[in-house]
Amino acid sequence: MRFPYTTARKGQLEACKRVAESLGTYIVLKAPTGFGKTIVALISHSDVSPVLYGVRTINEMSPVIRELRRSGFSFTFVYSAAKMCPLTQDSGGGSTEDFWAACKSLRMRRMCPYFFGIDEKLDDVRELLNSESSFDPHVLTSLISSKVGVCPFFSLTRLIPDSQFVVVTYPYVFREEVFDTAFTDVGPDDFYLILDESHTLLIPQSVVDEEIDSITVEQALKEVKQYGEHYDEVLSYLRNLLDIVSEQKGRLLKRVDKTLVLPGEGTLFLLEDALAEIRLKKLLRAPSVSDAVALSTKLSKVVKFLRYLKEPDFQSYGYLSESEVSVLKALPLGYGFIKRRLSLFKGVLLMSGTMPPTHILSPICGSNLTYIDIESEYGRVFPRHNIAYIVVTSVTSSYRYRSKGMYERYAKLIEAVFNAVPKGVTLVVYPSYNFMSNVLQYLVINGKQFEEGRGTKYEELLKAASTTDKVLVHCVAGGKITEGLELLDGKGRSLIKAVVVAGVPYPQPDDYARDFERVMEGIVGASARTYVMELPAVIKVMQAAGRAIRSEHDEAVVVLCDRRYMMPKLRELLNERYDRICRDENELVSAIRSFFEGKLLTRS
Image (tube, rainbow, N blue to C red; front, side):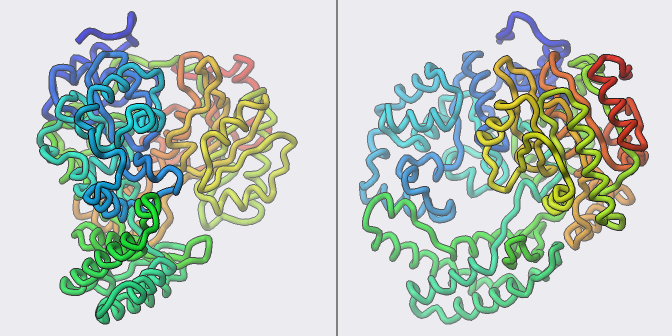
């Protein structure tokens, strides 16, 4: 397969060759955003088939689809069937856990207008994938149902046997029950796997995280009373579970012995029987097809939670949410479930701009892997003088020093950076929503601001960033903005001119962190804290910094506001030289102005 561009970036062709020569093993490709990792992954796999290409979010499918189409590969894509279903678009859809029961019922009763006649229209679906101008999977999904008139999910999955590449979201990679909904005649061992943004694997709770809250359990109780019959044992268990969940009143995760939460096997079977009966009765009472496909039960969330908690790598933890609701989480301890899942594939290519060194990856991949670090081996992709790393030592987000005075100091530093940056977006990244809230109450800015919320939409942020010359954006480390959204102008250049990391985004020092560290001590010994605390923090910092430089035309300052960035372990993991170390806001302002005036010499 020929490279589809007239010119290749430094290291691209070499990386294609090295990956292709190592297929069938574990391969790591570390390269910054803008290097072209996607096309390298595709070209290097051009002589093998089939290939599963995993991305974290639906939106991240777009650039993969663009490169697949440009390169002429046969492909299809799959994400949540409930979100792809045209019948759920007007109703908003029910829960994912119940969708399949409703879907199956409608298909069996021949009530779905999109399911029948798919095979006769597969050529039309393939033509649409190859010819439509849009790369957006949401748009393509909508066109399959509106133009071709068939179910997007089932038509796209039926293209799998004739496709070299299948683009999927993470659940299809890591959740067996999700994989099985789309891949009926093949298993993971039939596929080579390409996994984008693989740094996520080093934070296992970001890959799988199931939870229930007191409201859900209480409503599940009501469902069983209303729809179920002769389920006294189920009612007794749910009352006990509600008591356990309702007891969770701390803000930090507190271990809850899973043996107290899990029902016996007999009771779990009864819970599943009750769930099946409730679903059936709700479906039969649904007045329309749209109501049926929007089926939602609370008991399904409870059953799904318990299935995960049963897994040997999982433990339960409780806390009180910001909305004052008691919550119980099922979280993985260690990398066991990730390692087992990856081992099923023919070969694995892990890609990210923020992958840690080889020895850090051994608990996931083992020690026998091919590690390709583009910038270390072939030189920097973008000029080093386009970015400056500045550390401010007068502040810290350490819990022991959090106070009104410290929050005020952070507010003054943020104000100083915003005023010193001549234009564009100043992105401020906080360790948590609580820390952000405490700083913002002391921040006085004469200019436009945007604050990330849990439900922030990309369109809202882009509108705020593109309608003014300067804007201050507040967000949380590991959130939507720092992990996947791009802020670009019409020429594809980054709008972000400064990234301020307000503190070190360490995980909270809770029972989960302590248990995780205890598990890792048995695997890596004294290095356990690196995996539990330093590594997640550094990955979040690097992801935030990566938002600013997306091409060779971008320039930005990254301001690390915490004296702990001078600690040897953080400096080692960040692997970036500091261009200036500032003791106060005056030195900081001087450094920023010097950078944008071209007078601050950055090191190569």
